[in-house]
Image (cartoon, rainbow, N blue to C red; front, side, top):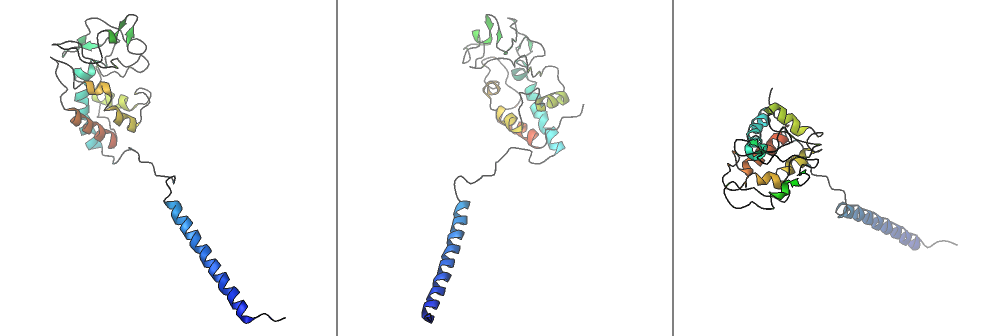
Length: 213
């Protein structure tokens, strides 16, 4: 029995149409997948933008003079007793660091350092998290040269296992900010917090170079 030529033509057209529709569906599927909400997104990191030893070391000059000011250094002593006053003398009450940095026995930092500054001249400054660095990670500023402090700040074994991103975030830590709100009668750090943070980020993102010894 002979097949009608018109039927063969119709079947051919149908096959072409089906193929064309299949191709269109494939293209649409691929295009849609590119816009799915759960499609992988490239992680945005705060790694080094541009290594520049000159700019990095220059920025650290601002960082160093800020960290060595009494408002920062007094809570980063070489020993286990915090420092006090603009002349950074040993704390009059002789409190000890303790394992967690919050004092020992009944002499806890929070006994005198409340959640906010105590009103009055030279009264105890306050913060909900007032403490020294813990005994396992003392992060000493006192007596450190610029070279030594820069290397220490970048050493994960000494800085609390912080990478560049976490170090940048630390600039806005509550106790760091407290240095610019020390209470009546105390000298502020040599630059504003905004200036310090800008220098801190610049130092880190241009290579975190340590000044020469």
